[in-house]
Length: 244
Ligand code: SAH
Image 1 (cartoon, helix red, strand yellow):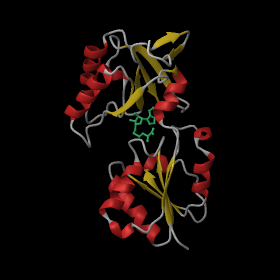
Image 2 (tube, helix red, strand yellow; image 1 turned 30 degrees about the horizontal axis):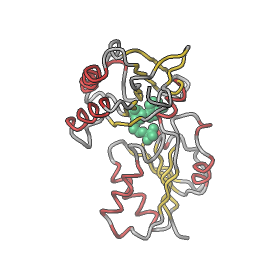
Image 3 (spheres, helix red, strand yellow; image 1 turned 90 degrees about the vertical axis):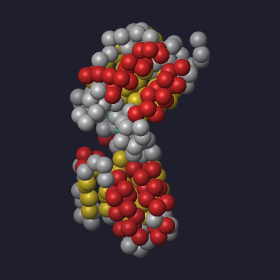
Image 4 (cartoon, helix red, strand yellow; image 1 turned 180 degrees about the vertical axis):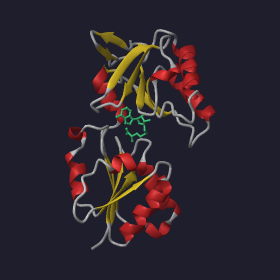
């Protein structure tokens, strides 16, 4: 039987947010490959091998997926949220580009609900007008590029969503990001810290940039910053659909 690789998004956490299409693909798999906490979300069954690996080995994981698929395995590579958002889909295509011997392996990508959309829905509609998304991790790009993009996005009056805002290995860059945002957007701009969205212990905290501190974010938080028109109505945060 010929193998394939499917790269799927498991959504932000809640099982009801896994799409039926992703469930179907997982049901057909012989092998699941991914970061330990995501592989843990897959129910073990007869004939299914679970390959859970540590973080930061994306390229090894991608090559492993392509190579066992070439030998006939039906491989599902799992990401949280959406696999195309700071996740495994690009890693698989990078591995394919570097290793043309895998060109005959069929690859499909199946979308999932990404963290910022689940967070925005939980808060109301803070991304209701034009917005942009920035990964604040400097693992794969220089901090200067991140700082520049923060300034440019702020000046263009985009609402913004930030992934990987703060980790133990880089605890202070998020403070610098907040400084840039305060300089460009002022103290009163709304910022929402959405932690463990769609899990039982989800928390949402909306404050102004003047009140925001770096400790409000960690690696399980996605951060949403409003544009200049973003406001609260009752307990909800929303951005009007037109420029004000
Ligand atoms: N592919 C994933 C993102 C992976 S990057 C997606 O589409 O959602 C990892 C970052 O995503 C985390 O540092 C955090 O910023 C965000 N994230 C992922 N799941 C989250 C959740 N349930 N709640 C809040 N943030 C989450």
